[in-house]
Image (tube, rainbow, N blue to C red; front, side):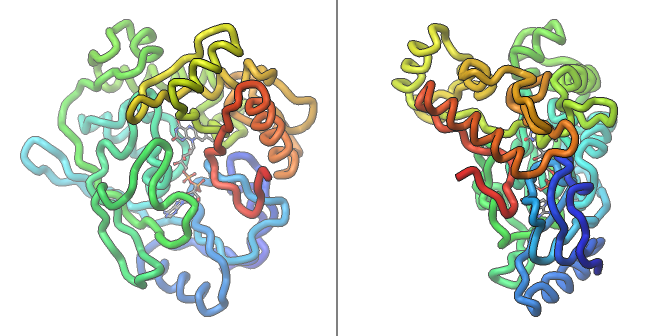
Length: 345
Ligand SMILES: Cc1cc2nc3c(=O)[nH]c(=O)nc-3n(C[C@H](O)[C@H](O)[C@H](O)COP(=O)(O)OP(=O)(O)OC[C@H]3O[C@@H](n4cnc5c(N)ncnc54)[C@H](O)[C@@H]3O)c2cc1C
């Protein structure tokens, strides 16, 4: 147990004040002991994985931060499929690379997403037409309300677009994720940009290893792979989710912009609009912002810490963008990362 631990080095945005207390847990028993300790001290709890989807306030966190370090990958065959249990503290991208190498299908397009396996169900991570929920068979959590471990089936996880019941809740701590993979060396290609880069038809397939490498190359071009040599990767990934709107709103956006926004089908007759497109057309191009925080030069949805930015700087940039998009298009962008101790309003 450490006291007054700076959180900025533990996050990819490199901002955030100290945690009152911080402990790493490498087993479920250690987790239970840490949670009991937080309860005894009436402290708030923050579980931290790789820190790649959080914006922590400059004031820090006034409670216990639990760093997830439960490791282990165990695989068994079940007919044509592989059932793989992965500790929440395993690195996601290392595991995704292993899956491709072993011929476990379903995560080749999720290459290069930073963070730990235990965080992937939290916002149902997704990219290039794949979501982690497509291969999750069970999420093992400690339910703090019930005081017990529970193995949750996907239907009980509330998975949606960058969403689950776990996001922005401190009730559940994920300790293990069970995946079920189809075996095979080809991966589906479900995203137009990826299909173009691979030279295959959208809806077709390509060798999983090639899909992985191509996704990594596309992501590097957008600053979406953590890279100490790339200042545009000092971010939390996309800062806003793509808004899901009704057909009338999509038509209004097109009329205001004088051009059709990129759109994807969503639930019912709703459509998902590309948030990056809205941001750029509302007057926030790549590289926007004079100060230490601003828009990445490689992707309009990533806010970056250019060096010395505070959480306040990042919140101010995010607020300007959200308000600018709302004023121009009447669409309110939602923040994707979890804001810890800070807010846009
Ligand atoms: C460069 C870059 C690119 C990115 N690209 C993508 C992308 O393509 N697609 C995508 O979906 N995301 C993307 N992200 C966001 C991020 O990588 C993912 O959301 C990732 O799953 C977060 O993992 P983490 O371990 O860093 O979580 P953290 O940032 O540590 O935590 C995120 C949230 O999950 C909670 N949490 C973490 N672990 C647990 C646990 N074991 N139990 C309970 N709660 C937990 C935390 O309390 C916090 O609320 C990107 C981020 C960056 C920096």
